[in-house]
Length: 285
Image 1 (cartoon, rainbow, N blue to C red):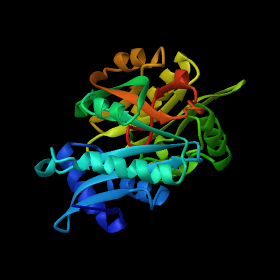
Image 2: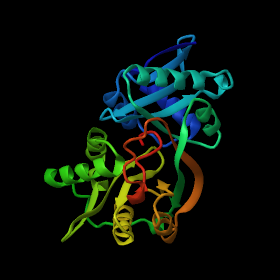
Image 3: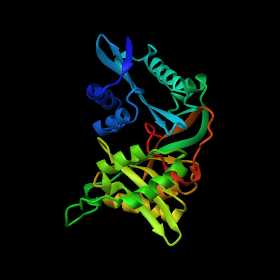
């Protein structure tokens, strides 16, 4: 087995592994990883064939994210995933990132704990399944327009406070790929909330979804579902938020699985978990 830096040529191999795992990422998502951290994404090869992947993104030097740890089922049980994870940690330690974060499944959590990760808070995946008759209708084609740049800048500034670091490059990529999913809610006092979204391989994904209160959260979710044309919509809800799960249940979402947000190092920039209705995604933070 050889572990090396991932390149654009490896995206088809990454797509093959995520399809086997049943994940929702697209080639555009892989490109975001490579654009954001070209030296921090890795693949494991066996006999010249990519059998595993892992990615990292560093946010403003404050903390980094580890995601997309995937291993071909035929090569599981031999430590490949752990070796990829350790390669990510070695890379991030070498560039002196003070805090490393990830979102762990119940199976992965004990492994991460042995590597020095601690729990920050809990997350839940929620899924909405709609029939064709339940999808929103439009007589006219979707308008080809995005949020005006001054408003987008305002959203990105607010997101730095909510998330704990600047991730404008990633959010701008989401906005370019799916501008209709970039939503904001304002009133006389200023911005009350916002959301971005992705059109995944089998479902639309809402996140990050940020709201100061329940009313703003409901408006954003309602608008996102009106823009989505997919039968399946998924989101990763923060249990630190007091109203997000209530809003999801009211719209017909059902609980899918748990996740645990974990960190290793000095968690000096936790953001504001109480306003986070849903995260960007386990792979991005």
